Length: 155
Image (spheres, rainbow, N blue to C red):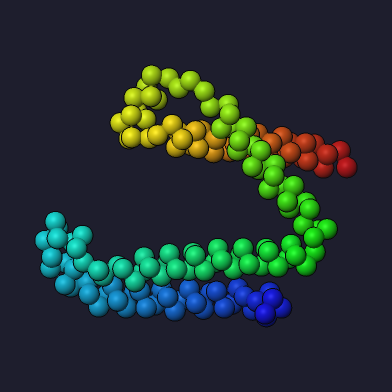
């Protein structure tokens, strides 16, 4: 199965995407007149777009499941080669928790916004961790880019 998907996987995914898109477009264009006939406040009650939403959610879940499955298969078949990936995931988790730990006293304006949108302390810490970790990764990526360009310049 792995060899088949590595050889034909992109073609299969493209054809599946075309089929799902065609079905969605036929269902939308088939019911567009009745959708346009609805009053604007009633348009939210229609199910004309449901297939596209469910198909997108289903395909996303399917892709996530296959990515996890193939990742697990590769990890179990080559545990020595998986060490680098495991270390990378551990570093990313560490960066996230470092960003979460650095989340500190928010300004009064931020606190007011958190109360307005009913964001809990746990959610706020998660958001701060994701933003802090992302900024740390951005800084690392910029530094690696500059260093690699300098090394390439002197080669």
